[in-house]
Length: 131
Image 1 (tube, helix red, strand yellow):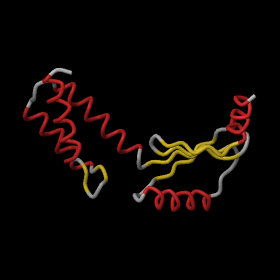
Image 2 (cartoon, helix red, strand yellow):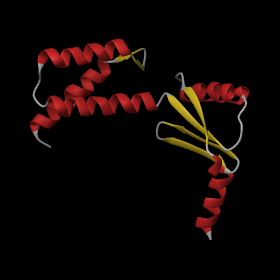
Image 3 (tube, one colour):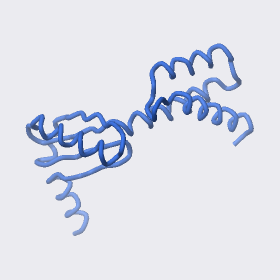
């Protein structure tokens, strides 16, 4: 990695840290970071923006849970999942439900890079791999 690349990544990390407010991404702070980049015109702006975007996207994904379900899902279940995941990750988690009939029954929950599989399709796939 060249010295220019290291400086670009370091600046992207600094801007990312400045974009957080109370541990969460702040739209106002992101706008400020982008305004700074526009004004200062650093070397390798595209590399900085790509690294910054990746850091922001990763952080946002850590605060969102995508719940895939096979059938209908009650709002009380979603609320219970929200409460449980918020307690587990010790930060506010937003839960979004999407129907996925290929699961057959059960749930699949993704929070950032974490995947929780509790579906019939997942159990059948694990069984098929074991044979």
